[in-house]
Image (cartoon, rainbow, N blue to C red; front, side, top):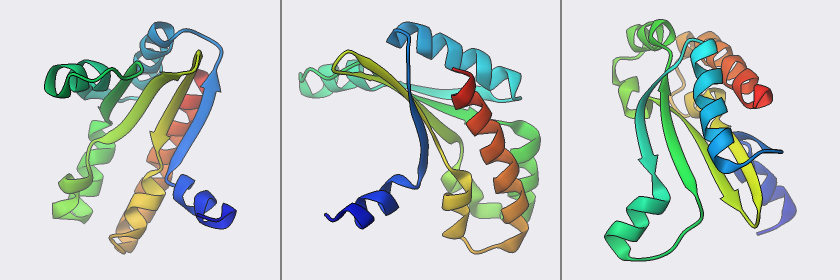
Length: 136
């Protein structure tokens, strides 16, 4: 895969390395999501799941399914089937002694749907998620 292709693939996320432990980053992610009006609806401990289901070792890795109810309500009014793309996922993981946090970019997700009513909502949600990542 060429550099340009790799850049396009990475555009679906907003990510950064954080100078704290995995556990600290997970706790901060929850706090910062709450400050921006998100609740965590789903939580997947990828490391534990892969160990249990496949008996393989994996780095610390969690997927937090976050939802901002007012924004979700607006989006679902504009596009009934949008629930297929909800909630907004945020990940925290450790790799080679470093901790990373990332959030999905809703603007990229909404491009797939091509409903102009969703554009402004996606921008607002993305701004909130970027603030969460930047605050960790």
